[in-house]
Length: 311
Image (cartoon, rainbow, N blue to C red; front, side):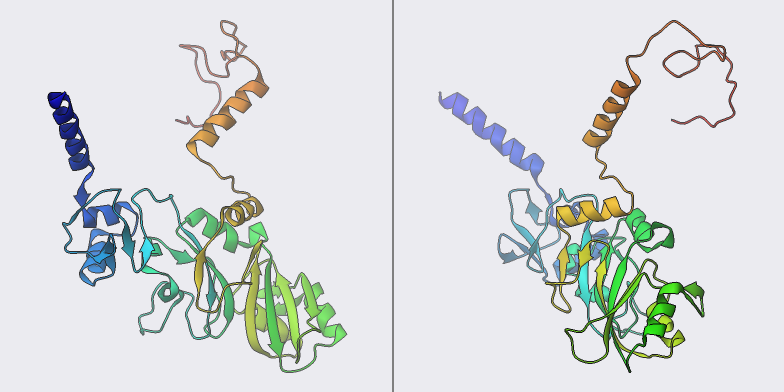
């Protein structure tokens, strides 16, 4: 019995030893960034292990340790991408960095969420405020920002005067601005708010488009706030705050831009469903092109199509 207990203890010790890794490697594995970036977080005192400031880059940790960066837990098994929404304040640039040292939306993101490749999906002017999406998912960035996918974006603006009914109609039917023809999907006055407050919805996002649209009908935008991107809303997010998208928000956004939520299990499931729709394969019989009923060429048959090989 004593020998058995000793053997079990040794096995546990070996498992724990194999699970250990240097803190800086753990942080890199969590997707926080390069080794240099993660090392800087540790040396600057932003990283804690089980509630205590990390001792060194080589401090040994395991998945059972509670590791936090700037108060946010991190794990070496993060999802493939990070998806955030921020309420951009006035005076922050919609860019990753600025060579003049001005604040950017990246300064709003907690250090634990600043992954390599994280960028804003679209831009707001320096003095515009409101909703901005940040992600390291390049395909989603492209689809949210490209006019081809026609994602609605709603803005609330304060004007220097009343927008006349003819001006409102011109915005909806189309005007010519610096970047070409443009129009709004919807324009309405916000009667429940004081002043000359209006809501305008577009399905593209050219530079300064909202301001240029109103200028084309003789009005000046004094303040602009983006309220919505597709199914994402700024409501409930204080200015300067950032939060991660919920699963439902992400799934809804991906549907809007025609992206499926693909994982390995889903791909296998889709392939199985496709095979079921096609019916069971039959072997042995060939058609005139030398293809079997399975859809591929017969062994030794010459390819008659010019499509490139895949796989």
